[in-house]
Length: 234
Ligand code: MMA
Ligand code: CA
Figure 1 (tube, rainbow, N blue to C red):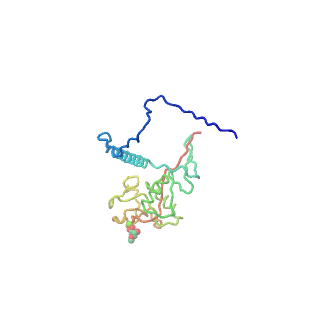
Figure 2 (cartoon, rainbow, N blue to C red):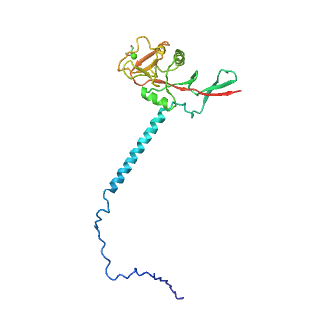
Figure 3 (tube, protein in one colour):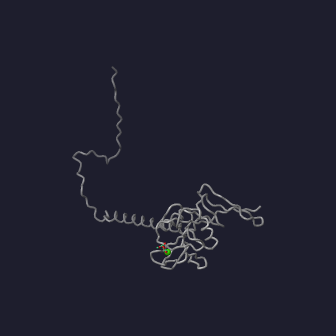
C-alpha cells in the first residue's frame, strides 16, 4: 500500500501586528455608547425624506393624469373595422370620412347609441374611454339626425351631454352654455328641479322637441366623436 504524503504549505506573513494571542480574547462591549457620533434621529430623517419623495411622486402622477384628461378626445384608433364614405370632391381635393363599425356618421361626427344603461356620470366615463364624449347637439340638423337614427332602436331615453350645475343652468359637457336657438325641450319641459339635473332624448316623442330633464338614473346614451378623415389631392 503506497504511503500517502500530505504536503502543507504554510505561509507566514511578515506582519508584526499578527501577534499571538495568549490569553482569552477581550470581551466585546455589547452596549457601547457612541454619544454624538451615532445620530439616533438619522433613520427618522431618512424615512421622512422617503415619505416626502413618495408624496411628491403621487402629486406628480396626479397632475400628469389630470392634464392628459384635459386633452380633446380623439376617437380611439384601436377599433379594428372602420366604414368610410368619400367626401364631396372640392376641386382637386378628395377624401374619406370614417367612423368605427357600429357607429353612425353625420357630417364630420360619429355617434354611438348604447344598448346598455348607465348613470350619466358612468355614461360620460364610458364615452371618454372610447375617445368620445356624451353627445353635444349644436344644430337642428344634428338633433333631427339623432332622432331619426334612434327610431329603429330599442331604448326609451338616451343621455345627451347636457346637465344642470344649478337649477336652470344648463351646460354641455364641453362647458358651453345651452344656446336657446338649439334647445329642443319637449312640451312642458324642462321641469327645472334639483331632482332632475340630467337630460335625455325621449325616443317616443316626435322630433325635434323631444328632450326631457330627468333623474340621473340608468339610461341609454349617445356618444359623439369627430370622424376620422383622410384627404388627398389628385
Ligand atoms: C316624469 C319624468 C319627468 C317629466 C314628467 C313629465 C313624472 O315625471 O319623466 O322628467 O318631466 O314625467 O310629465
Ligand atoms: Ca323633466
